[in-house]
Length: 125
Image (cartoon, rainbow, N blue to C red):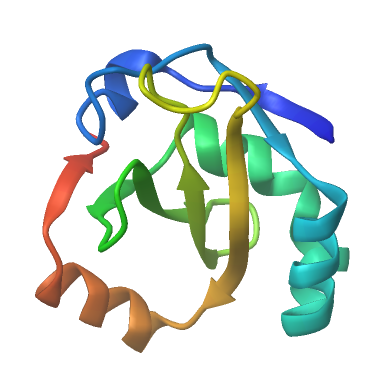
């Protein structure tokens, strides 16, 4: 398990009110998942995950409980990303942590489609 960053509970409480802790981790198993499915994205963009989590442009309602779908455009290179963050909640197992489930680069058309068709819980001003 690797500590990545801390979340802003005020922002993520829009997804889940009973947020516990603020540490965000990624497991070795999830790293392997990302490397297998999005190998170039992991190698080139892993360093942006803390920024994606701490400064989301949008948080979208997810179909799974205690989960945030995060959209972020990285200003320095104009790339857009989608990340899935599982949140630790009060009722969950004590050993759980906020954790990255996956992340990948998305195109402009996908970005626009998500914003047009999904419920936006948070928008950076």
